[in-house]
Image 1: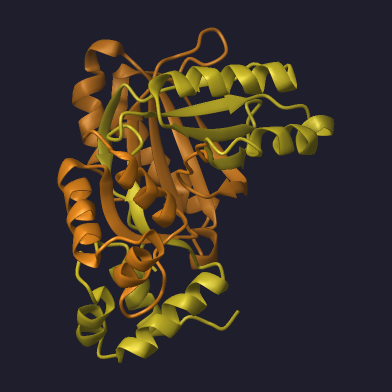
Image 2 (image 1 turned 135 degrees about the vertical axis):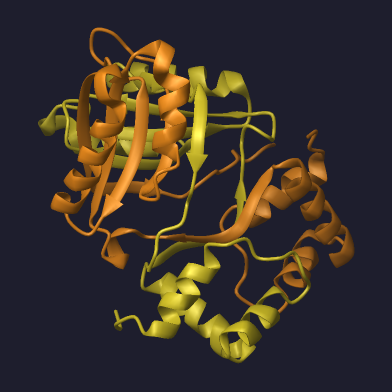
Length: 150
Length: 161
């Protein structure tokens, strides 16, 4: 992975803002950053292949599509961790999953097309693994500031 | 918003990301055999209704040097939660802040605040600032650092028929 230049950092920060819906969405951004459109696209592709950006595109809100999200957690024994992980991640409803320092050591978000999908998927994971899936749906959102300064 | 079959095909086509080409919507429209204008109009309707939160990049915190990612969790007196949650959510270093249900006796915490930093010491300092704000409404707390990303794909619709 090549080291990040100041232009890369500016670009990463800028790309976390909403990109306007235009036929050539990268052209205006390139101008703003003093780059050519080609150079901008090459840089974004490199940041993706280096894993600095995990994804670039629309962020869909499952709840607004009539579905739902839910944060879930499991206490997975160390010796069974990889086997359980394979079973959990096999569900396309698992949008992301983190290992964390706690007895509840596996934390994942379910994104489902229907509200019932949350219960169905969490129940299925419990049945497949024999481990309780704690469910922590959001009751109230205080802020969602998604930006990370590069 | 009510999504029709075409909207759903659009979500399926874009959930992996936008093609990195000068005219990405023309490319996707061609794949879906839709006029580009219709695709853009439908995406605009999804943005207006909140189905699309934004069109943007998801960075990998770890690769940006934000190697300490702490999920701070708090047991806050229920009658103070709305007032204090708003204060915690407004802190510049808190990236997500939610009220969630307790799961007693395993899990006594009802407020979750995500704190990122370049070291665990930095995250611990930020956590101390939250402790001060919660004051005597605080009954207990913990911090769960992430040690590994196990999956990060975002929403994926199941294939239909």
